[in-house]
Amino acid sequence: MNKTLKTILMIVGVVLLVYGIYTLIAPEASIGIGDLSIDVQDNTDAYMTIGLGVVALVLGFLGGKKL
Image 1 (cartoon, helix red, strand yellow):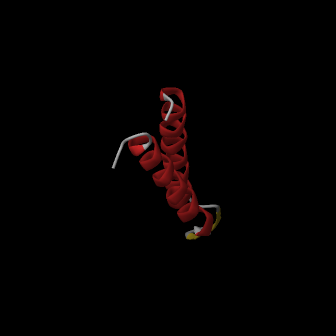
Image 2 (cartoon, rainbow, N blue to C red; image 1 turned 60 degrees about the horizontal axis):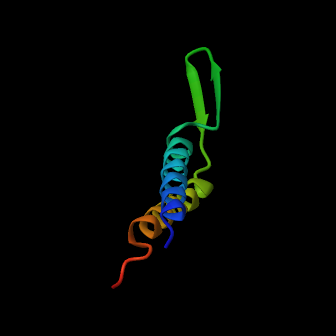
């Protein structure tokens, strides 16, 4: 595998991992009325983003190596 392609895969993998973890942790919406505070999260897309990031990193590390 080309060194440039491996570098791009590694960068994309790191970006996808960071974005996925951020969307997993950060609340989507929050409502606060007085002392009552409600946070709502929808994490279904975050797991897919983290999975794609891991796959991109693995392909970047193992791409072009003879097994």
